[in-house]
Image 1: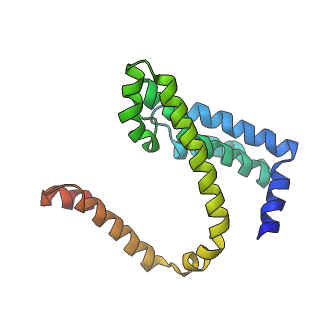
Image 2: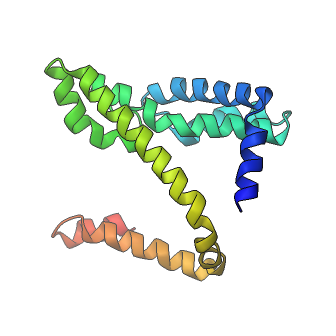
Length: 172
């Protein structure tokens, strides 16, 4: 496994792939700043341009795009109080209040630091635990995925309050 990770880093660190990764990061920053445009919209806008590219360059561009969209969405949520994506909705609560007090740089710094450390920690944990989770993931079929979706909808419905009507509506 470690050999595959090192080989992927060597391929990704070539100048051509670093250029496409940087292009994806820049596009992700632009897409993430606009409220309402998230990761799926960014991928949908970029996908037609990736058909003629080789697979590694296209994947590097997509990784760069998707990795920074949640981070760049914090600009609008902190500075304007408009969540740019679903991942930055909680940032509006504290970040916009700090921005109104004149401490926007402090809020942006905290958000970017949390994004950096969370992203690095998540990538490291995912890299080392994917071999453990792989057999469990491969066992999941259609029935298990359906039950997982029903469980998720049930949890959302149970958290929607005491009204049975709103619970059923959120489940449907």
